[in-house]
Length: 377
Image (cartoon, rainbow, N blue to C red; front, side):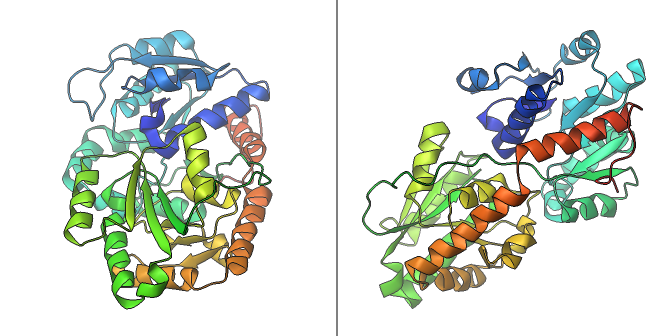
């Protein structure tokens, strides 16, 4: 169960879709339940052969109340319910379903309990916590974290449930295809256009680079690819125009499927200056395409630094500029070698087969037919 079964769900949608397909391939009977949005029609076919049911919501859109969701869950009668996400009506439906059926559910928090995420819209989440979310979390048979820092954030939130730590997977593209011909170098951001991604500070860092290292900055263009959330793109475009960045910053819009592959193959490096992440799929995708990465520690991928696949940046404009300059002054060969170290990291640690095997063992343990797996802490 997930709030969105379309691209509107961002990285969470892709994790749910690919995990469902892999579990189906392994022989599990999978049904997916989600809420309707304007992109469902475009993405519905990408779930096949997994069964997907979409429900219309009523009232306050951000809550997503769908009166038909709970009856459908009861009718489907799953052995295990896996809810991806927090703060919406599916949390309420999970609790009610468990009470009615006496069956267990697991919750993937997807970084939504990280400190920055909790303080963003703090009072709304505080009220939701008191009304329904705390009950949803505490009654879960297991919580799912994508990485150890996310598990630590779950514990800091005061939850003592079992937590399984299982990273998501990534599909590996062929690297033999030649990138599209292009003058100059491209630094790519790809993801939601949301304040937590640190894009205002990225633009401020880009302005610093134009001033402090003009000859190096002139070789690069910053592409900001992604879908707008809460009109943040308008703010970013205005900031860019007011600071004279129109010629070196391109807003290229949301990219999916073949269009996303094209921008990843066109890029020479990737940046994610985020304040808060669970496990960012965008960075794993960038590494899969052999791109060197500049990222904050809040991206929860310390192994990327350890493997020499990423440059560390902090969330301030000056800190971002410093890290980007380190990346820009490298030789093309050094950047390529850094990107390939990321590619090897993804090959070794982030496969969907490994994810499905581990999450299946958690499901078996929750249902009483298997032992507690080692990934559960």
